[in-house]
Amino acid sequence: MGSNDEKLNEMVIKLGKYVPYRLIRPFYDDFIKDKEYKICKKMPDAYINKYIQELNEEKDDIDVLYKINKNGDMIEFCESWIKYIMENKNSILYLIKHKLISYLETKNPDDNKIEFKLGRKLATDKNLSF
Image (tube, rainbow, N blue to C red):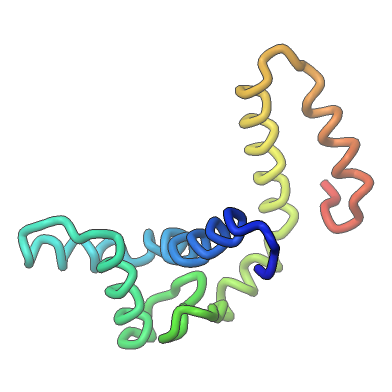
């Protein structure tokens, strides 16, 4: 935010508007499907965002990764997920690295040293040791 590049600012706003809801949407799938069944139609994404917001406020018993405040401008991570991530951070980082390497290998079929190149770069980053 605050860049002089208007296109970049638009992209950041769009990401901030939709991505936080998409990441936690699977936690609410049963509620969304139930609501769609009751109204006999598929809900548009903007309505689903509002519905997730309502569920955030009404239901404290859903163990969701994070909750979005009423204004949609702040998220609050749930303690149980913070604990899970901290206890399993090495496994999570390993999975992220594996997925990244797989993705890069499919996009760069002629480069057979991606894992080595990426592994060397990540090994120098003290926060991402594998």
